[in-house]
Amino acid sequence: MRYQKQKKAFGKWVKTSELANGSGAKIVSETNSQQSQFQNKDGSVKMQDVCKVQFEGIPEPLNVSLNRATINGLVDAFGEESVNWQGHNLKVETEKMRVAGRAVVALYLIPDGYKKIDDDNGYANIVKINSNYNPEMIKQDRLQNPQYENQNQEEDNQEMPF
Image 1 (cartoon, rainbow, N blue to C red):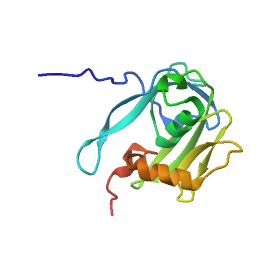
Image 2: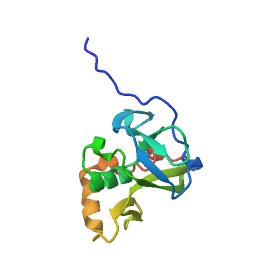
Image 3: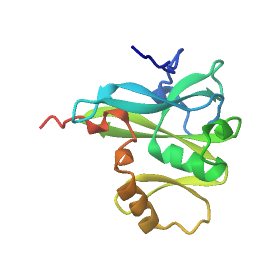
Image 4: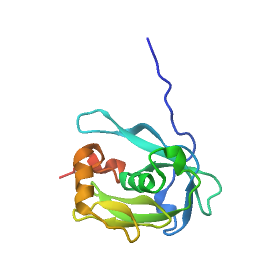
């Protein structure tokens, strides 16, 4: 039987509710896709994109599951290779929200010269400041990549309790 080595993040995970909005951060490892503890509606294991992040005022790097908005912003700013996302100054932006009735805090890591906005459908996007924001382009990206439609929190694809 053939086995493949899996990359798994070890160490402490970030507690987003304890982060200071507007503080600084830097990605200090390559981002890897790994299995999460959640399942898709079809029962398959949901994947998450995890890296280590050094946060301002916290002595050790912490594991972070990056949401789609953050990943898209990093790709736009630094390219498609996650190894190139390391070492850049990022701004921490947190947002309190409810997912399946549960209070959670979403984390966005925003590159210098970028900002977080909501598109016409209420989805978070990280775009270059003074860019020509094109909601139609983002809508097309969502249609072409439906697996990323709701990745702001891992829990968002769980069944609603009503």
